[in-house]
Each structure stands twice: as structure tokens, then as C-alpha cells.
Length: 172
Image (cartoon, rainbow, N blue to C red; front, top):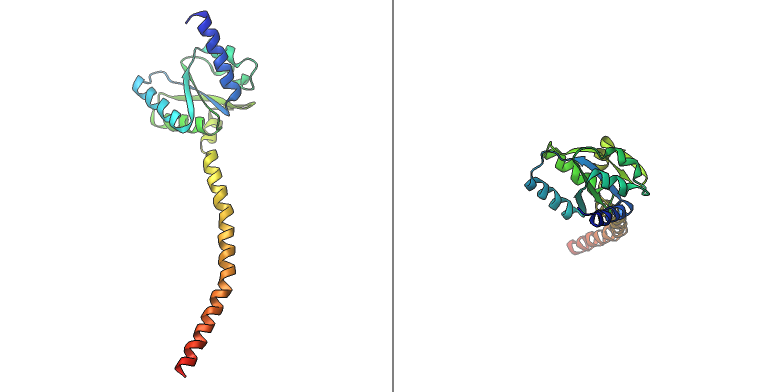
């Protein structure tokens, strides 16, 4: 990389660290190109991004961001996974690490909070923002359905009573 390319990369990575909802750092030594491409496509489909960056450049890019506390994680062959949704990146990385033992989650950051590997794994178990919205919408719609059922129930019972009297009168 030339000096100008490095400067541009550091600037781009700095913007990523500032704008991301969460950042996950992991070791990837021994992962094949095909596996890495599969990982990247899964992350892209979920709405996140995976980058392999030189540790020195990543540390420079972290300066002045909220995620500055994760600079000590950049040792060895590291990759950076990030997304605007705070749950997407940890979820995809942890799921991929379950099937591929060569990917080792080191930690990450969510805003100003520095996360260790266990915190990233527990964050991955939470539902995503879209799943939470769907659950909330379901919870809002359920009472309305129940109210409609309760309101209709007396009318239905009244109709059954009238029908019973009508049958009784016809029989008589």
C-alpha cells in the first residue's frame, strides 16, 4: 500500500468506527478464501461488513472514536466485522465461529462500551432490531384482536338466544 492509500483507508475505517452500531474483532488464522467469501456474503446479506485490516492502521483509525478501548485486541491476524444494527455483526460472527473453529472472537465495541468475547456472544443471542419490531407489533395487535372478540361476544350470545327462542316458537 502506498502512503496515500493508507491515509485513505485509515480515514474510511475511522468513519466506520464512528458510524457503526457495533464492531467485532476476531482472529481468522487458517480460514480458507472460500470460507472467508462465504462469511463475507453472510454478513453482507445480514446488513453488515467484514474487513481485514492491518493492525497498525486499525489502531490509528480508532483514535478519536468511541470504540478506542478495543485497540489492545488488534494483535495477530484480525478481522473487523461491523454493522449499523448493534446485533447483526455479533450474531453473524458468533454463528460463523460455531461452524468454523478457526474464527475466534476476541471482543468488540458497541458505542462507548468495550465488549469482551463473552459479552459479544451474549449480545449475539439477543433478537435483532427487525425481530424486536415484529414482536412489538404483534404485542400491539394482540390486545386489539382480543378487544374485538370481547365486544363481539355479547352480540353473538344475544343472537344465539334469539335463535333459540325462534326455534322454540316454530316448534310450538
